[in-house]
Amino acid sequence: MATWWRDAAIYQVYVRSFADGDGDGVGDLIGVRDRLPYLAALGVDAIWLTPFYPSPMADFGYDVADYRDVDPLFGTLGDAKALIDESHGLGLRVIVDIVPNHTSDQHPWFQEALRGANRDRYVFRDRPNDWESIFGGPAWTQVADGQWYLHLFDPSQPDLNWEHPEVRAEFESILRFWLDLGVDGFRIDVAHGMVKPAGLPDIGHSGQTRLIGNDVVPYFDNDGVHEIHRSWRRILDSYPGERIGVAEAWAPTPERLALYVRPDELHQAFNFHYLFAPWEAQALREVIDSSLATAASVGAPTTWVLSNHDVKRHVTRYGSLARARAAALLTLALPGSAYIYQGDELGLPEVLDLPEEVLRDPQRLRDPDSGRDGCRVPLPWTRDLGWREPWLPIPAAWAGLSVEAQQGVPGSTLELYREALRLRRSFDGDLTWHDSPEGTLVLSRGDLLCTVNLTGSPVGFAVDGDLLLASDEPGAPDSAAWWRMRHPA
Image (cartoon, rainbow, N blue to C red; front, side, top):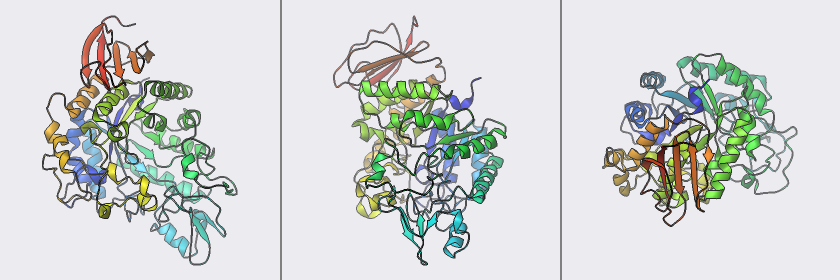
């Protein structure tokens, strides 16, 4: 039986930068509520909200101090409830972030651990091993009495010890709290990270973070995480309305990633192999085929994503807006679930020239080449950019990319997304590849035909069908088009 999440279009709201409801320059839940009609009109099925919990904001909310409340910067628990209810009234489901690998160092549990009590809720050792932090530098920090604690991310994000029954029970309680409030599911941050290998063995070399997603990293993707996800699936299934779990999981192969979405585990996992594929026909076809095959091997849908709050926006990664528009049509033509990062629908590029004094990302502070501030610049709603002193400056050039400037304008990226999301609802069937000129892709699903020219030169496609939508003139360099075939294969 078809279920909503198998082919949903899900819109990622980076709360801090989406919409400012109280005029303090920081996005908030009131701002999201105000813009729900925009999201419903865009045509998405669900929204995913990044963390809005009480936090010192060392990592912009991914350092949680209280998992059952809302940080005053973003509003109140009442605002969260109203947002969930209003979303449901507009036909939108709501997915919230859960951060189970680590807490904030300001969490009451860690403050207790610093005083020497109940340290076994975290990973404390008398001597550190050679593990490196994702944000750079060692993954261990020493406390006043000489012991060391593990933090695979920032020192302000101590890793929890998932061998401890209190940790497991606490997070089951947290899930139930938000499910009782009405959320439709969870995006699970670092879903591959909670279980560490026995004995915490040394890796034996530096440069460990370069292996993530491509090779085995001892502190990630250990088999023990799957029992946690099975227990969470049982909780999700105990609630009505098809509540879901979505894994942010980095695994060395698509086959390892598929383990997270077996029938008794989570419902979806982000497809980073697709996100990082180059703008090249053969590479994209290979990753699409691999993704579909491995997901199908466990009966799961594939997910497709081009950008998120942790990577450079794909307009910049691909090198042009033309390629980004074509990639959007390719992505939305594929079977499975599609994730849209806020601003994708506006064609926003990465902001590469933010002033040094405003850069805030802790990852960038430790590794200057990997900062994520540039993909987190607030959305431009109006030609005057619509924010009062935003927490990150919005480029003046974005006036022409604003919602106000693109809304109702034929051919704009916003209207391209709206029409694509509308048409996408009628697509059905498996993907079939068709022979096509070198450097191009042609695929069909039912009576939909999608042609993509990934070359820098015009290409003629012989299509027996009616044009539905195109990112540019069909066959133009770096373009994609959708056709309704008159005689489906």
